[in-house]
Amino acid sequence: MLTSEQLRLLRHDLLHLANISYSEVMDELLDHYASLTEKWMREDYSFDEASRKAWNELGNGRGILHIQERYKKLLLHQLQLQHWSIVRRYFRWPTLITTLLVGTLAYLTVRAWPSSILSALFFVCVFAPYLLFIPSELRLFWQKQIQKRALLTSLRREVVYRQARYGNYLYLFVIQLPILVISLFFDGTNSRTSRPYLFEWHTALSAALAFVAIMYTLTYLELYTKHSAKGFANA
Figure (cartoon, rainbow, N blue to C red):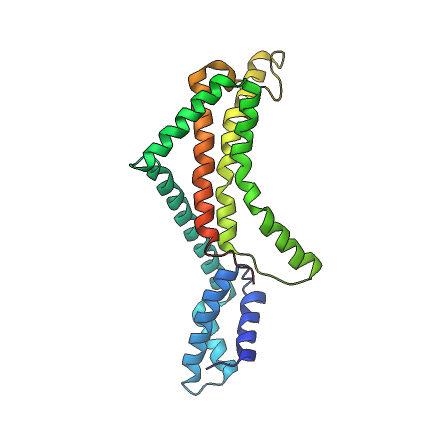
């Protein structure tokens, strides 16, 4: 069994020689690194010799860093699959009832409100997921800047945050792309930088866009809740 000081030295190797930057990866690799070191120590090697052999087994710094990148890609892929699984569930019984209600709400909203307000609501919906991260951002700021604590980043938090980028894509496609296209065709004479063109064309199209924005927010909120319950650990 390794002592706390020996574990600290192993952690130091991973942190400074392999540049491990995520807390979840650090926990996994430290456990594996310690197990390999203990294995060699049972073969009557000293701690220093055993840790060197274990380090080589892990793949040295570059190999260990590759493990971190592979772990990150795997987690991101799993998260994307989970998000799409949530989306598909909204079109299955009995959640389909909620989906139909959302569609009805979107249609009634489009008929009642002008396009300028609809575009503003669309903006709020697709960027609302970022608001979920404000408490954790403030907590990290306090720990790093005020308490001066050196913390590793939570990989789970980073990939969940990265999934919110699809809201950016929706905004670019629905709001910014039509403005760009019209400015190219009309040389800017009939375009405005904030005009919601797609919301002015047809009620059905506006309702569909509102529906997509609301569904995106609902599914992302469920995804965030699921993973935040597991904890966004920073260590």
